[in-house]
Image (cartoon, rainbow, N blue to C red; front, side):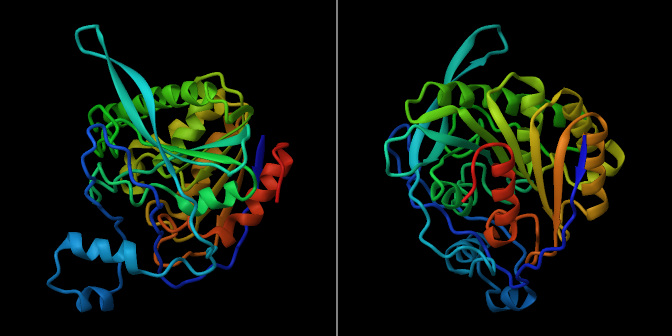
Length: 337
């Protein structure tokens, strides 16, 4: 069923960045974490002003000192609890080894149980960010939006990301087999996350929502088409596994979304911006069309440009997507503000 609502939503055009969460990442051996930072596309003026600084220093300044997206909520970010998610990984010789996935859990101060959003992170930007960094992948604005409405939010780190065990194998080659292997591995990581959440007393899995940003958005769309789930819906923020310039020849995103549409029954909300640097509006519409024509149900919201890059700034632009998300939650029976 094709539900297409493309709206022009006025958003701030002032560049901004997302603040990192307040919690410290849990460490297997108690070793201190090196802070790493998010990447962005600073203006020419900013580049000249900081010419001569190392890339690492510039990125740190962007994360810690730059303003937020215009229109984003300004309340204090919620504090994340560091948690560990057990995962059993098959080895090449047919055995298995025990690993742990790092996760960041946000929840209200009351006892629960709470409805739960599992929010899957994006990529490292072709290693522009270290795989061990979590500063850009805690999504405090999204967490605050849901926690204030009585939700728990879990942001798990896939294998090789943050302090999670295992190798980092989400490669960026324009090769279908490599990209598909990355998606398959991410689905297996989600199996461990779902099993963990299902065992928690604070989680009401009858009110479960899947979501994610960029690669995490595509993962959230794909997962319920491959696995049975109690989830009631999916929110996809700027989802895709490879950038458009690679996808023009491979059609990997489009065909992956089409496959998900054939196997999915959950209602979905897809959120993108017109100035997404990874996906132009035509590509975004083609992904949505492939999904819905294959049988999936998704409402597409294509927002007006957000700052310097509507891809990386979308999660923090709460005032842009607040109404769409609130309405979607109400329609699928998970309440609104």
